[in-house]
Length: 124
Image (cartoon, rainbow, N blue to C red; front, side):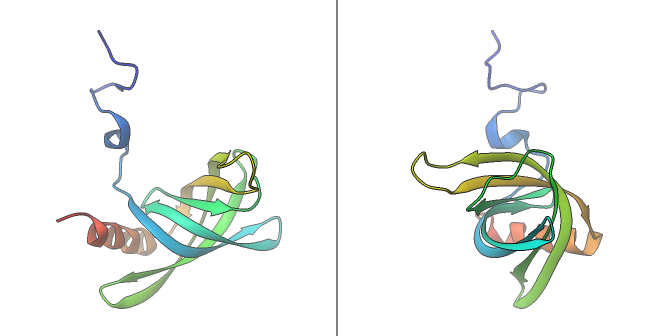
């Protein structure tokens, strides 16, 4: 009998993700409708970014983002754009949302920086 959490190939939960991700607490700037919004990164992978924001964003909205990553003692600015694939209110009493963006436009260099950052934060 198949478990409802099991995906094709038998993978479950975080194992279903194509790329590893790292929990983070970093500033991120979102450019949406010509306005800049400051938010906090929850986690990041080469495929996307999840962040906390004080407003809701409709699904499939395309936005630009810019955030710092420090890898090997060097600071990098990661820039790209993507579509909102999830945006959920995190508390019924607070105006805070957890938003996930699939990065469809980021340079390979920025994706490599993200990979290095994620790898540096994985348990040994």
